[in-house]
Length: 215
Image (cartoon, rainbow, N blue to C red; front, side, top):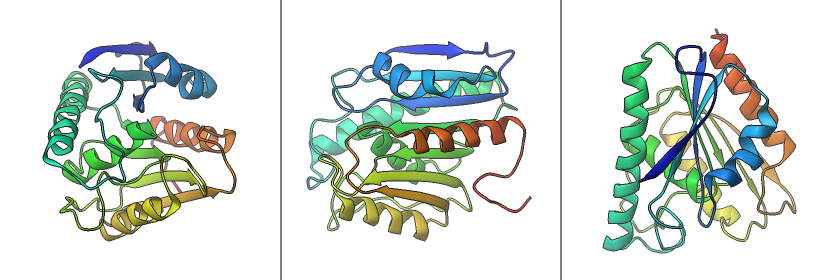
């Protein structure tokens, strides 16, 4: 994996950790501009992993799953997971939000479905499962994990039907879901999505219920 980028509060001072996973043909600097710098949260330690290549896997998420794609996804998930576990060991009491955009959000979804306790909450911004209906995709039990996920109805990379299939998987996994579908939205992150990410990070830091959960 490329060298991670860190931003915000020091690990000693942080009240919450946020892992931000970039998408295909995106950089950590893109995630800084499109997500991190729009949040303005001083109590958060942001960790931005970097893939070895221009993306975490070469195929489109909506292509049938091949052995090559499976290997690439598994390698990327191992890298992200190892990074997260290192921070968990260093700050075991600090809550953590897993966030990703586009291919990064797809990777975050796949990580949750393989390691359901890896995060305390997740934001999957423009996401779907990696693979198609006929593929054997893992399905974990998320046991009420707060998950916010969003998409555009005509997104060029994540079709609405693939997004809804992921929602079905999250429902079967018993996640606590809030979702937004944005008509006509370009392949970008809206102020609405940033507001939800901000609210979730603040709630985690203050140990408040997320997404309308009952205390």
